[in-house]
Length: 432
Image: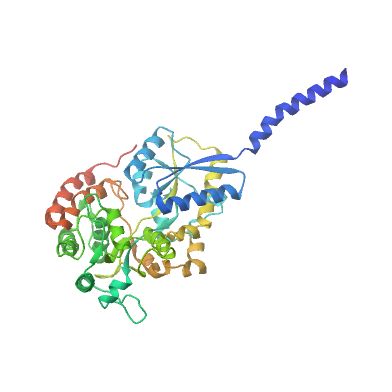
């Protein structure tokens, strides 16, 4: 009887221990929210799957939300009420708004060290943009500048290629205008494809680039300070459309389709279109050979707009994150940084220096064609109202395209933009 009681007791202990053992072996779940779709979304999904397969302690579950303001509105709202994800992809241009508004949790150097990461592992410009008021709030993933794509067949007809079939250097506004005009005159195709419909962001990115090239300040002492320079640059870009070198009013899909279909000699767009061109070339559906160069130097230097994707941790009503979950989040961030070569294949410039400075990354094509652009990147000025799909950018996309179509003069477009946007510059930064 005593032996039977010992057996039953041992069975009960073992039975009680089995659920504990199962729980101990169950991976820590990390919830990721991302705004990445298309090719970027597919690459991020692959990185998540690879990370999950690389170990058993952490499982990342990813949810993709609609790009732009819908994503940021949901992220802000959910974090404020303590219902946000464990980690999210954000744009570094939005950090003053998110970190300053209390939406994100700071990441200490000691926490980074647990994942084997240091600030010196990343390019200084991107690391600087990941910080707010002396504290780090994000782990940068990339930079994705505006570049200039060109159709070699049409550029050759306009006499713009050298003996090696590469675009001859273009320096100055007149030279770039002549290139667009030359393609139009000698091929009958558009010289330029660029999104230009109301709601388009390309004009803001290009305008900001050109202001920086001529060292004109956008905002100073809480006021717009671009003055005559801003009107002149919008007028010069508008002339490309009003003179017929590029069709006005195209939305984003129509502008990329025009270039991909062989209907334009040049396209001004971000590096995120690289995968589509690579894919079409491999499948032999593109119909022409393409090249890519950094945005040409039209003034004092070759400054060009960029932004960066990054990982950040929502504050979630300042709740303390479970230590195991925090370790999982940091491990995932570190894994993606160290395996960002696949991300580079999406056209992006990795922010993690050991990858970006590797021989493989330097030899990656077509990225090597525009690698020089990384030395000249500029971001939106800091401000809670700035950044990707932020309120100032949204207002610019509302009025500036009117100048490209000729419905508004450049001065009228900027006056309307400034009247609506200036009130934001005077408002106190929100604390969500």
